[in-house]
Image (tube, rainbow, N blue to C red; front, side, top):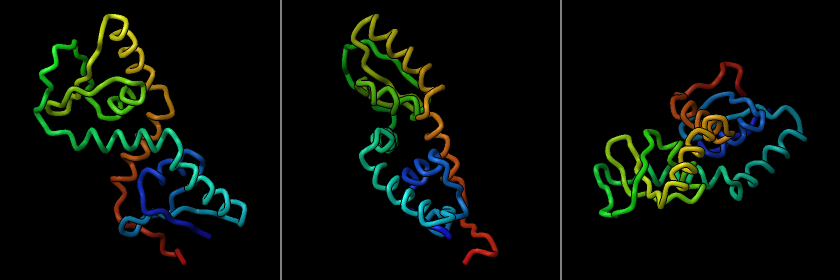
Length: 153
């Protein structure tokens, strides 16, 4: 049996919860759901994702992608930058304000030295967090071309 979702964020969340990707057709990503219990859990997780912090993280990822390139606020606040929107989204989840983007770098407002230390801590914490794995799954799913197994019913 199989189920599908039309959203990469939901698909990444399902992968984090142990569902195996079968393939992709267009925007739909198909998963194995072997029995009625697995199908019910699939549906529950699909809905749960919408209220989860992973949905917020995905929202921040999309927002950072839409920032105008080579724009940086005139703010006089000390800034820190990250070279990756995944780390940037994680920093946003922890309350840091975006100042702008130049190339791949995303700049944030950091109010003081203590805030700078917290920013650096969050940057490093991201690498060991489940949000890094979620971000990895999103990136992998984006690279997944249309493919369905020959025995797919």
